[in-house]
Length: 149
Image: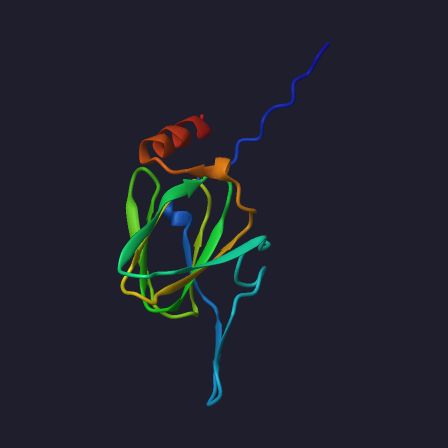
C-alpha cells in the first residue's frame, strides 16, 4: 500500500495582501535614521538586499516572483510602485525612507522612477534565482491560474 503525500496549497497573494508600513524614523541635527527591522516591520527574514539607482526617468520591474517576498523603500527621490494581481491594480507612491511597501509573491510589480537620482532599496526573503521570475505578463496570469488549482 502506497500513500502519496498531498501537496500543501498556499493561498495566492492578492493586492489586499500588499502592506504599506512606516519604518522607525529618527531625526536630529546630525542625521536622519530609518530602521528596517525584521519581525516588527518586515515580516520575513532578509536574504538579499539591492538598490536601484535611476539614471533617468524610467520604468522598471515589470515582473512577478513565484516565491520571493519583497520590502521596498525609496531612499532618495520618488517612485510609484504598481502592483497587479491579475484582477486589479493598485499604486503606492514612495518618497521617504520610512515608507515601506511589503509585496508578497505572485504579484506583478512595476516601478516608475520620477527622476534621475531616485534610489530604491529592495529587501528580499530569497536569493536571486532567474527561474523564480515571471517576466511575461501573460505567463504570469497563466502561472497564477495553475498555482490556484
